[in-house]
Every structure is written in C-alpha cells, then in structure tokens.
Image (cartoon, rainbow, N blue to C red):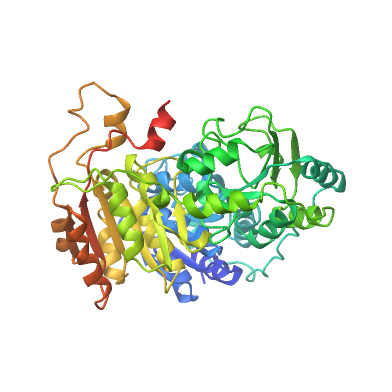
Length: 538
C-alpha cells in the first residue's frame, strides 16, 4: 500500500459517507482507494460542481463528504464551491494533489495553501509517509468536529511512497458544549419578562428542532428560521417561516413587534434581520451559539450565550414555567390565514407569452409531491421558489448562498438528491446560473436522477437589470435561449412553459417512469425587481 491508498482507506474507515470529484493523475489513486474501501463516488463534469455537490450532500445528510481534485488547476476550478462551503462552516474535506517540493517548474505549481486560506478554508498537508495517518486524522477531525472546510494537500512524491504504520482508530466525537448556568439564568429572566418573544433558528439549530419547538411552547414564543434552516418548524401552528428578506408581510409584522428576539445558532445578519428593520427599536436581542467569535458579529446583542443549542434549550426549559406570551388564539388564526406567501393575494401578471414567477411556483407547489428536497440557485428569481415551494423539514431545503455566487444551484440539487434518496429533488435556477452550470446536466442524466429542474428564464442577469435601473443593460440582457432544447440534447425530458396550462407537462412526467430528469424552461415575466431584491438594494 502506498500513502495515497492508505489515506483513502483511512478516510473510509473514519466514516466518509460520499466522495465527489473530477479525477486526474494527481487524485486518481486516492479516489480509487476511497472507492475500493466502499465509499460511493460521484464523478462531476467540473470541479466547481463537485465541491458544491459535496457541500450540499454534507449539509443535507449530516454526514461527512469528500471532494477530490487534481493539483493546481483542479483545485482552482473548485475554489468557488470551496469558498461557499467554508463561509457556511460546512464540515467538508477536500483531498487535492500537490506538486512535489522540488517541482518548481511544474505547470501545475501554485501556492495552494495560500489559495485555500484566501477563501476561508483550512489548509492542511500530508507531510511525510510517517506522518500521513496523523495528518489525515487531524484534517478529518477539524472538518467534522470544528465544522470547517479543510483542504488536505497530497504531494505527489509523498503519495507514491510506501505507507508507514497502521490505519487509525476512529476518534471519539467531542462532547457538546453545555452553557454556563449563569448565562442560562440570565436568559430565563429575559424570557420571563417578555410578552412577545420570537425565536429565530439558524444553521446551528438544524439538529435541535424538537428541543426548540418544546421550549417555544413553554415560553410562548413564535418560531422563525433563517433561510438556511427553512423547514425546521414545518407544520407548527406558531411558525412564521423564513425571517428577513423572504419573510411574509405577517411574519415581518410579528417579528418587528417582538420585545425579545433570540437567535439560536443564527448569525442574525442583515439578510435574516431585513437590514435590522425586523428588530423593533426596543427589542432585547439574544444570541446563542457554539462559537464565541460569532456572538455579536453582525449586530450588538444584549446577551450572548455560549453553548450547544439543544443543551441550552433543555437547560432553559427546566427553569421556565408555562407562559402564553405571543401564542394567542388571534395570532394563531392570523398565521393559519396568512402564514405562507401563497396565502398572500397577488395580481397574476402572466401574459400569453410569459408566466408570472409567483403563479409558476404556486402551481408547482400544488403539483409536486410534498416529500421533496428543494435546491435554489442565486439571482433575482430566488425568492419565489424559496417562499412559495413548501418543504417537509429542514433537510428538504438546501440553500448555497453564503458566497452569493450564481451557478451553484444545479450541483447543489445533485448533492442534496444523493443525500435524500426517495425524495423528489427540485432544482430552482435562473437562466444565467443554469447556463453557467449546464455541464452538470450530464451528471444528472448519467445518474438517472428523477429531478425537476425549473429554470426561471428572463433572458437576463435579472438582479443587475433591476439594480441598475435606467442604465444601459446591453451587457446583461441576452437573446432568448431554448433551454428545453438544451435539456433534450443532454437526454433529459423537457418542457417549455409560458402559461399555467403548459405545466400539465409536469403532471405527465410525474405520472411516468421518472427515469430521467425534467428540464422546465419557464419563460417568466419581468417582475421589475423581486420584493426581496428591492429590500436588499435599499
């Protein structure tokens, strides 16, 4: 066994659930070692797609994933996906070849450590055959225990050397951090005084839904989520859905009326707080997080509690008696009547040639099975599927927006689909992002994923059109592209949608064998700038 084989075999033993990549000479052996050890491998068509697939897989499954890349250009191709994962604190391990120290004239040579550090990932390296197992375990522990995106460099000369030593034991997971009793007592005092508390759950609370729901019932608190935790409280009669720019008018009103807002594993950044406008001027703001560096970063907080969300919620519940708080019968009835965007009346702006994106997504929500996983790309359109397509739980929504790059949605949907067998994967894209990532349509077809790929096609980079109102849009508008024909060319079923009646084709596909994906080229109306985008640009 050489070092490359040893590293791949060790990672399989440590518990890697799935690997993604584009294989070149620098990662060929380690990738095959992963496969030989039983780790499923998905070959992408671009390293950027592979990194995003792995990111989405790890988020959706809660299990560690790996990306493998060739040295130099393979790694740089993956950097946007790596940056997204790093900004999202996704526990992800990237295995990348690297040039030997003496190969100073190699075409592939770059300062890989500097490149990955620049985008927020952790740079690690297999230094020698003797240190290979210790280096690998250290990188794996950082990724999984510290929730970091770690890039483990594998120099070619070290890869080819004979392995030294035995495979590592699986490390014990760290114990969750219990909050200090004084901090919990201080939070309990604030909850006891509050008349209208609201809990906002974020990425760090996605594993603590039951604890937070039970606590909120005792505390009389309404529940909301950041976008990345959408679905966490699905079906709860006092849940407001997504806070921030995607919030319904009712959610925005009720959150702004809160006298206590507690962010549970949520950054409370400008997107979640609507640039601060969703927090009333007299509201007390609390943040609960595992990372001390996260407390108060985006806005001042009145109390910061360092601790695991689930443990903090349990400890707090033990100090509280039952309260009505914000959970009145009137509020419950208002949420039931206007709690979702589809319950908010709108004037359908569809024409005979273009479909209103609101009407499109309302109808898709009716047609598509409820047991779904929705992945959303970035762009002007993105609020519509996020707001109008319901999801069954927090694992039914995957939102790669930390880097705000377009073109990640299709690969996100692939990773989420592989992590959610049995659920219908839905990729919601814009035409710009769809064309940017179109190579991965081959991956969807090759894998036989029964995916519905909905392209909101306005023949433009819509965000720029609406941002730069009244200026020359020649650089951001394009002739109509027949994306249905492109989908058919890749071997997908395809459908052009201009009216609601055209969506009957979705029903026909759903009633069929679903042995290939469906590309829906939805020619959407110009909305003049989505409501959430107008808020973001304000």
